[in-house]
Image 1: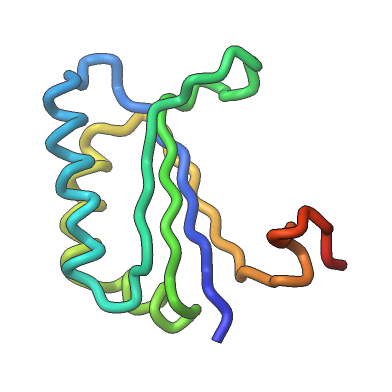
Image 2 (image 1 turned 120 degrees about the horizontal axis):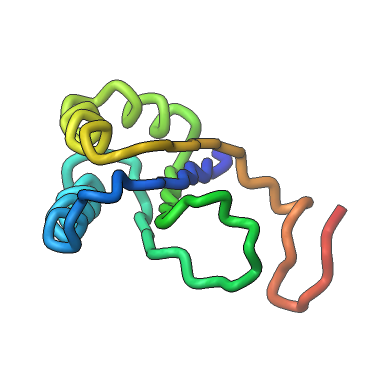
Length: 114
């Protein structure tokens, strides 16, 4: 089965404190334990001076073992709890998914496989 990447970009409301962010993301990471098929969760604060962030301050990347695992996650009660928490804190959000295709990635040797 092909893995699925689920990535998102967050722009938090200005009044959201660092303490609230830390608590929210700590809860976010626990979804790997709570939801079957979640392989990895990563998140971080934007740190580039490139100027192409469009005001988004944080991003996340999740990896699922399959499309079915991602679909289970989308309707899982633990995910929906986190959605409710984050929606109250967010000004904007963008989320996108894609299926990992080894033919469209760079392998260990550094060669692009098309």
